[in-house]
Figure 1 (cartoon, rainbow, N blue to C red):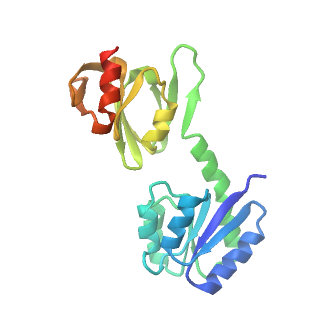
Figure 2: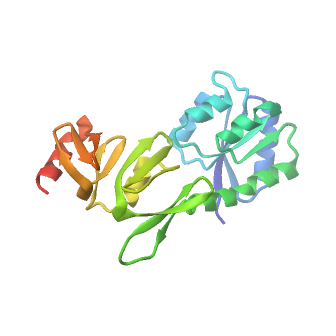
Figure 3: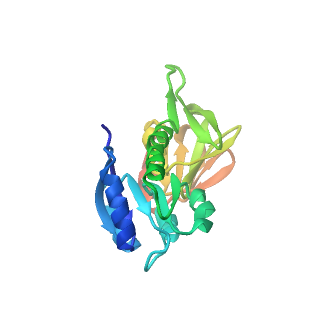
Length: 236
């Protein structure tokens, strides 16, 4: 059985005790730590693989939603709060559920059972299309999944939690990290030229020591990438 490693971020001992008891009753949940503030939780997230975080909103030092917004790659999150007015803000940060205290066990179960649904969505965010001639992927764009052929991509730009994929005919915005996209791409045609840009080598029309030109757009070459990029381009 797949198990989800959890942390509780809660400064109220009674509330933390209730959540601990609930987690121990669910076979696919495993409690790693109870954190009394966001700073402690951040250290735990950096040093361990955490799949799920039960997050209170009113925390000392740093408020729960501010903490969540500051995380570059947060785990799944279920908010636990006595204040319903923050629910919209929580859902805008893609939390799985928003539980109001006092939390009933059946409501807790309903929330954690959503984990499987969210995990399946994560897996299908990019589904490879089996085609020996042209490699392509489907990317989530809003409520649609849009097919992009790899040989049509001009360049990809990082926009924090999203990337913009540009082809000659269109541009799409999808929720991915640039490193994740880079791992999916064919290494022999795509080149990381900047911390925020990946370029298709065969679409580069011209280049200088500071930028490349693709489809009449100038894209900067990052200083730390300069030596490698110029070496690759100069040697074809």
